[in-house]
Length: 236
Image 1: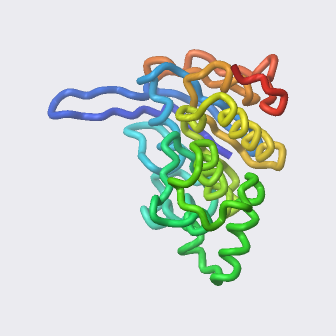
Image 2: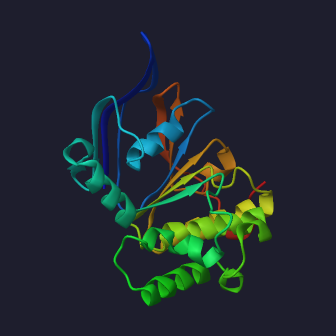
């Protein structure tokens, strides 16, 4: 589903070039749960942004479902991102003056559904993360864990094939983080491809495969030998 070949990303400031990703290559199959791990500054969030069409590479090839990012216009990238990708961020990125239900409906705005269908889809997504009782609440009335569950509901409302989660437990206590990881594991069991960015070893071990980055290069790419399951309460 995802092909990355000799991908390089540089940022330039005047005549100074800073290389964030350095000729990395890997493939991700549909249905995988992959953690991209590494210390701060290793390039993992930049890589996720490129894979999610939120940024573009300086060199190399990135293909999503056999389509190269260079072959698509900005409008085509936006449509593909909206229909086939869901995003969960560390800071939740919810609209503070918008209800939980309306926050989840946001990705459906340009999808051409009726209002009734939009509401039905949003309610189903919120039910999937256990928040059917919070539809009319505002984000500041929710705990951090509940806000992140709203963000996950928003990410899955369009039935994407892949969910990108960038440090989704980073701002949460261990119990809330465990609940978020359990939801992501269940979504993967249901067929969603999950790509998780994290710097935490125990969180990465809840995935099925770990790609480890350091200084913009892949240091290792291995299956998880002894996988943790959030439902068992194994988060430290």
